[in-house]
Amino acid sequence: MNFIVALLYCTLILSFKIPKEILAHFKSLFFKNKRIPPSLSQRIMTTMSRTFELYLPTFLLKLMIRTLSKIIYSVKGRRWVKKLDANNEKDGWEGYLIADNVKHSEIGKDADMIILYAHGGAFVFGDALMTLEMFIDWIKTWKSNHGVNTQILSLEYRLSPKYSFPIARDNILACYEWLVTEKNISPSKIAFAGDSAGGNLAIVSAIHLVNNPCLYSIDPPAAIVLLSPFLSGMLNTRSVIDNASYDTLDPTWLHRCMESYIGDSNLLISNSMISPVFESQLSDLPKVWACAGGYEIFLDDIKKFIGKLIQNDVKAELVIEDTNFHDYAIGKAASRDGAYERSIKYIGNFLLRYYDIPRNPGVREKKNFSREILPSLCRDAPSLCWDATFPLLGCYLPEKCVTLSFSWNRNSCYKNMNSLNKSERHCSRYRPTSILERTFQPVNVTRSILSTFFQEINLELPKEIKLNEKVEVVNGMTTNQKRTFWNRL
Image (tube, rainbow, N blue to C red; front, side, top):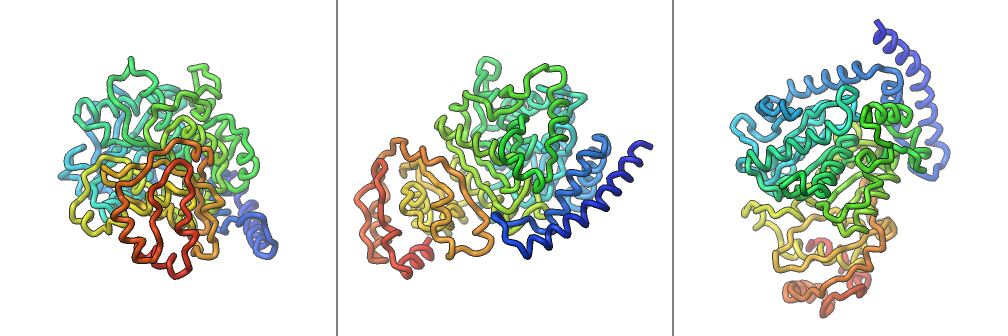
């Protein structure tokens, strides 16, 4: 009976709030704002989400998500989803294998990479199959673009308040141990991934793994992918204040969820195993890719964490989609301006850039060798980066090619704003400029290949690229030369 009252109360509140958001949207069309305002659909979606979080009981939120997951599974799941054997219940986890033609697939068999995924839900609700459409899009896109076979193990970890910290984290590590020890899958083929609270669990699990070698005798995964990760329970940053009315998450509700997650562990909310943004021992972590929306309340915490990773010599990338909110990367309905599709390409490029994965020869042969080398060169020498289209590129590097660290900041991304299309204008990258101080090694191994290319566009190739040397190549091009340069890539 109580849940009926809660539903009626939510309906009453939304009957007032939604018309108010519609008026605010039309008002924003006539008055200039410092930032791009949310779309009407975004306003309605965020209003409904925050209202449900505040006024619906947790069990009803769980029921709604599970019902949605069942609908998605009934439509698309039969070809793609298989529940894993339940002998792992003693370790507290269950999981689903998502793969193409899953009936004839076995975990790890003929797979180039395996994603161990933890779903979001503020630690209190969620379902392993609620992002099934995203998993299918990942597998299809990476197969089409890169020729790699991807398998995803979506974990059904135990939720609070019934199971408080560290049960969910230990579920992930138990599943990872099972993959490595029982299924004999190399850690170099596995990546941790998760959205929101699942992103928190993914990074916390990796930190616990690398900082406690006496407890775990296995190597860490090859990479970590974080989609709008929930990295701090403090919720005291500027972005929480500025974006509270734009995002899908309500800070008051999140505080309640964090208290439920901490439970009987009696840890402070600032403990690094609860809020990994406060972790100091990060140097042994694998590569990290993260994304966040510009309207996101977690934005400042995510920026801070990626900055700390880079300061600790961890390869890390962060993509910020200015006109999107929390968890835009898990579904088309939650994204704007093509951000969802771009995130799939970015993740695939990132994973393949650092993975030691044998590529499909048929796909590899189609790639121009200049396309493989030049994007890396342009990332490594900031002065070469004349346009924000360069971060959209992925590349494969030969083993003999020296890979350098690189730096981006928002100003360099927007250097040629007028040349970008509408969707690209909403994409920005965050990179601390302090990375420029790191020591680089000279690169001469690709000189003969690059020399031939630069001769074609009547430019002289620099003899070598050294520490902090600015190579004025693209900046000296004419418009036609730039166009030729880009077309060749």
